Amino acid sequence: MALKRKFTLLLLPLAVCLAIGSGSFFRSIDESALEECTIGAAIGSATADGPMIWKSRDWTEVNNEVFWNEGEKYRFLSVGNAGSPSTLMGLNECGFAILNSVSGDLLRGGGHLNNATMQSHALGTCATIDEFEDLLKQTNVSGRSTQANFAVMDSTGRAAIFETAGNEYWKYEAGDPQVAPEGYVLRTNFAMNGGGQGGIERYRRTMALVPELHADGGLSHIDILRTQMRDFSDSDSQPVPLPFDGSVAGAPDGWFPTGVSICRNSTVSATLFHGVRPGEPANLTTMWTLLGQPALSVAIPLWAVGEMPPETNGPRTAPLCDEANRLRRIYFGEGRSRTQINTRALRDGLGGGLWRVTFAAEDSIFVATEALMEGWRSGAVSASEMLEKERAMASYALTILKGWQPD
Image 1 (cartoon, rainbow, N blue to C red):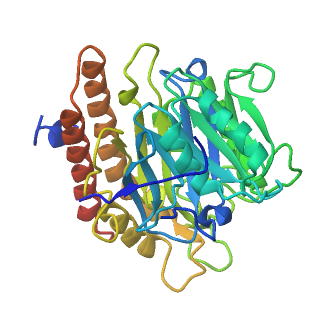
Image 2 (image 1 turned 135 degrees about the horizontal axis):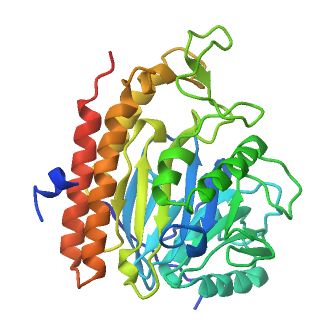
């Protein structure tokens, strides 16, 4: 059974798989303060069908889970370290979603809300971006220990990134032509108002890649999940075709160092929140999540309507993440610096490799989910049906990963 958490915050008043079945939350250490992530936010005019925010999460804890939470006003799902109360990204039942990247060049304040607990509080109390901005205005006075770029999205179709220091913030609305003429905002680990260059190689790469994806008919959740979140690049922010042809630092041919890539050896999960179209029910807002290293996992859809599938939240760790971690130990190699990945095992250039299997499975999940969404948009849908379908797809993804045994 998925772990349910209750917060008391006092600071502020597939065809095949679907056929199976139609105290104190505040911590002295802010776990998210050491993250290095790549994030983005886009409004509907920049996408194929609704606003999106997304995050590739880089951290040392490889065991990530999805949790179902009872907030002060709203229930929400979130991604965090296995067994940990910290919220690193999440979506509530109102269609409000939030995630962050650390921006260590901003001045931290003295309040209790840090990057992670700010997100938990926002998910439990905010239904819109305006309400989140009101929260920031209030805590500008009381102070926060935040150093973050918060990406937020709501069911009205808006998306924005807030560069957030301890006692001030700066809003970058994806719908503002002065700051986001193409309808999207991108960040890594520095703020435009901070002066740092954290994650500059990843920032340059995402600033080159996302416009390419946008030019091809608008951004889509599939392109971000498949291409941006599995992107490998070098220290000059140039893409590396797979399989990699060559050798670096004495490694075998085909092994490539990922330390400055969007898809890195330190990437432990990735999530994209896909918003609803105008007039659609907020509960159709979808959280697409890749538990584990994104190149070694399968994306599944989840909705903020109830307890999480056991594949995403086990008794101690998430089985989906466990399988991705099994592949991590193989594909990043034992006894190496563990920054290099065996690209030929992902795609061998002859039609084989892990991606041939996982991408095919993922494609079937994308197709099945879109068919479900079209039906749900045209009529009422029950939470029990949505939970049944997400469990079936999570089970299918786990079966695919368990069945893969590298040569």
